[in-house]
Image 1 (cartoon, one colour):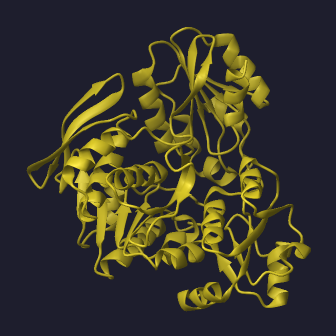
Image 2 (cartoon, helix red, strand yellow):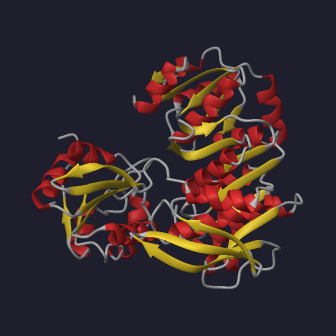
Image 3 (cartoon, one colour):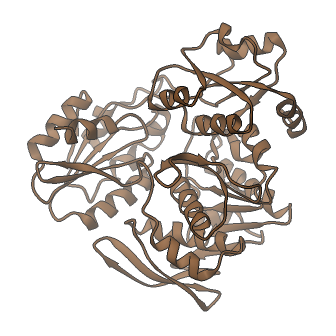
Length: 457
């Protein structure tokens, strides 16, 4: 749907129905529309903590998808996780309702704001979005935020503020981010992923990110890009951009890097001049890049350098991003959303710096297509772990037409072992975790249930 059509439909609608309302992004959009005076309802395939939260806020949520659920709606918003055979979408077509993709609805929302900072990248989007939001809020701004994960500061994954600053996570899946209107387009990194959609491989993905950066540039805004990421440099070649990095020359560069207990401290230098000092409160080398991207975007937005240094330093993270959940048998238990080989390597490396004993990982691969396409990379991602327990692949939107399995992945991974259930994984951990060890539960599905089983006892 063209933006003009989306704009007209949502300007005239009073009752909006959300298909897949329980997702983190869809629920945030639903909450924001409700705060703007719309009557909101929706459906999801199963009850969850989020659907219960929506219901508690006065939003009618149907369990399961049924054509009758759409009765009375003026417009329908759907997530990419559902297909056109969904009975609610089919009913909306029959009724002649405007049918709006989630990304287009988000584009409609952000268009009303002055500064629109969109964080894209194959990895790190949620952390950098949350960090940016924290710096803006703490420095006295009042941004509206759409993040891909919940933060304690916002009490959720979204925040409604004044119509000046809009900070959002820009997801590349199905080219969703090409429907957005960034004035500052951040590109953290580019990797091969979402091969079910990007059938043209890495070159197709790089082309999409280039188009995303150009959305801001063509509108008189800025692209902010990682100078150390080869794919990003290649994708944005020839475009004007503000760069950040550690290894290569960049407009915003981290220098004098040191570590204490896995947490980095460093100076940010802007075009050769001292800018600010950072002492991170979240671990891992990868978060240095998030901090640099955040500093560059905040500088463009007019935040004072002293505030940038102070508030990046006291940012403590967000839900399911290296989040400590408790302990078992003297071992600390963390969860992390990592579900791509590059993310896994970064999370495992951060855990190793914190761990004085054995590093025990649990990993739930996410989608058959990703596991199949990156099988060898997944098997090589756990080199710094002492043992890795694999649970079954989280199917999400897919069926297994690839013949791939977690037991195969366990056999291909050094120290790998297959667990037939979350309970089995928890039992294997309890048998080996001891004082000084660290348990890292990894994945984007429901594998956090393993951590709940461990720390509830």
